[in-house]
Image (cartoon, rainbow, N blue to C red):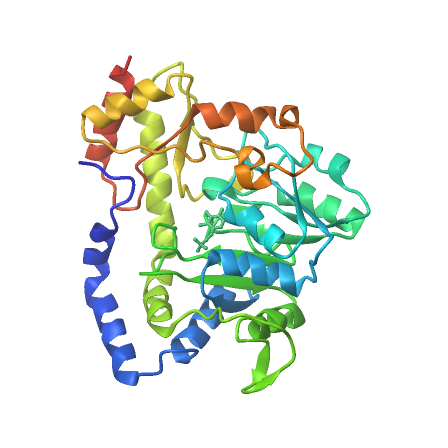
Length: 364
Ligand SMILES: *Cc1c(COP(=O)(O)O)cnc(C)c1O
């Protein structure tokens, strides 16, 4: 059986260090906002060339608190992609603002900058680009548009820790970058976890206050906030894994090359790295009109595959009342019927990739 992700393999490689870090945290008994969270924030900041990082409870909250810190509020419009996980748009609605979807580019699966400006109006306050599957969005074009119209930019980096656009890490272009450390993400903990990173100290400070009940000094509250803290055990685990993230991402990239080498079917389009970017392959997602045949052939040989995402957000029941026209999203519509993600994790072996490729090449 080859699963989509095998978390056990990675745990066994790092077990000694991780078990020791957990045991140490249990001995210290400082479970909330202790030294591991503080040090992880410093280390993630340094990794990104000096941003201010704030650990939060999960990636969804990272997006929510970043939007709050950027003053997004009821009545505002926020532009984003319909080809993403629900969390990206859910948080917009939670604040009483309205998600405005813009179709994706067929090259990258990410928001198409050429289609953003036609959706900007007086109510538009922000753009949330998503670096989907680990492929950076076109941050140069997006930032140019945002500056021209005075919009905030919150990067959804949940699937792209360590990815780069023109030599610069994602999360360092917009006002804020939001990360998820959900167990299957590239940098992942053993539960829920997330982080916001901001270049501006005041913005990061706002997130820091919001994550802890709007409080700076205990029992004094300046904002209506949240209980959204990253916990110490998760931070201790993440500090160990952060040391390995570049190596793990390189292994994902090597696996992607390996897939491209062994899969040979003219009716399958394999993901490519967009020029000038460093893709970190959170997913290896191909496109084919024969998706169901491929998925069954893989399943018959004990190989997992998955469809991310079968229903684009503009078609979700929760967004049925938004004013939108399905014909505005031809790429998302087509891709939702053709995408198929293959097993992808750093410890996947060449032997396994050959088996997967053979199953794909031989499928009807
Ligand atoms: C995982 C994910 C999130 C949400 O992260 P959680 O930690 O699960 O809350 C947001 N956006 C995208 C694109 C994701 O993949």
